[in-house]
Amino acid sequence: MKSAIWNRFFPEGIEVSRHRFMALFAVIGLACIAATLSNGDMTAFAIVLAAPLGVIVLLSLVNSPLLMFFAIFTFNYLVMGVLRYFYAPGISVVMDIILWVELLLIIMHKVVKREDGWNRAANLLTGLSLVWTVYCVLEVVNPTAVFEAWLMARRLIYQGLMMAVIVSLVFTQFKQLRWLVLLFSVLTLVAVAKILMQRFMGFDPYEIRWLIETDSIKTHIIQGGSLIRYPSIFTDAGNCGSNMGCAGIMFLLLLFYEKKIAWKIYYAIVGLLAMYAMFLSGTRGAMIVPLAGLAIYTILSKNFKAMAVGGVTLVGVYVFFAFTYIGEGNALIRRMRTAFRPTEDASFQVRMHNQAALREYLKNKPFGEGIGLGGVENRKYGYRVTTLIPHDSWYVKIWMETGIVGLILYVGTLVAVMLKCSYIVMCKIKDNELRGYLIAMLCGTFGLMVSAYGNAFLGQFPTMLLMFTFLGIAINGDKLSVTTTTDKEIKS
Image (cartoon, rainbow, N blue to C red; front, side):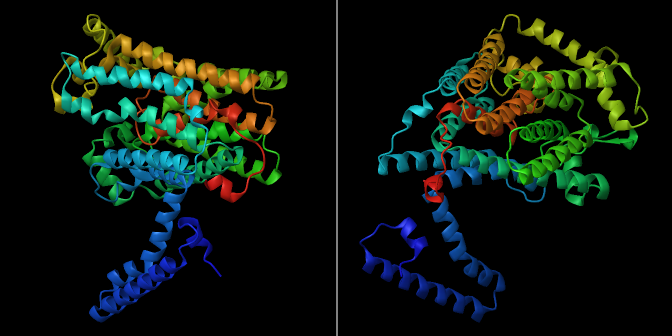
């Protein structure tokens, strides 16, 4: 009987070569096992035993661009949390490499199998991302730019374009989207579990070292330790809060569209836990994520009851935080409440002062200071006004580095794509369940975009890839097949 695994990776009609290869592989494996046992090297022995599984996994990824994308999605989500325990410099280079490998695999599969569907990548998101990439490439000749800073900020330049193309070509079935949502829910639970460990068990030694070495202790342990902001597995608490808010509103909205009761219960648990984790992050700006998501949901749903419930909920939340002092004894609620009373918040006043200074400095710099030269974290590339003032906002950072021209182009791209996706969801999607999944994704994504005004997290792991993944799927939402597919078709 032929091996099913083998048949997936090698064509028919080469039986002799198959048997020879398998025999050679077995001989080499046995020889390695014997050598490691004779030397008493148990680490090498374990590696040899695990090698066949590693080969199978690698071949599976090569054989399936979709599985490869799921691996990239998982790596992107977990990598910053893992790096607190292992020293691995150049992680952005690794991400660049695996994205290029994924794109190459997609092209190879389509060429070899003579598949159509290239036009799926010809959409508004890809087109505007290409314009942004060209603009950013031209920024290298900005008179005040620094090439090293420009090079190190390459993820901002072209990763959005790569993700738009990859996602457009990989996702063709609604069932594939459901698997992605399931993966996202599992990753969300991992992040929730970590933040609960930090809250109830405290930071472990590696996390304490990370807080000290990155100087994050000043922004995560505040008010003399009476308030602790928990980052979970993310780059910081701000990134954590916004991502948990995105997951929370997304999974809670799925309750209205998922048909199976078991899945409704599961999504409810994930959504509520994510919302709780958002509060534990202590990030005031994260509050806007579910609120903005709920606001756009009242429009996308085209349902009067949903509009009424959403509107009442928004008003209720706003009144609770802006006009009452209920729960003021709780440090987290007290901190969140300041987001609804910005004029009473000292940090908000500092931000306004900083933006006024930047406005004066950049008024004669329509193309900005140069990519990679925005924010105090980039002082290593030179002391400029833009590296001496904290940006405290992703859009302010874009403004610093690419000028008012770049800011209009960037924000215009996001707005145009969101409008196009909203039109597709509202007017072109006939399947109610698919529409619900796309609406939930767009609501979470829109919340992230709005929250980025108060936190500079959109360009960090895992948010940039997450945002472009959801937008890339939604803009091709009317092309997603809702017919039942086999596992073989999903992986092809």
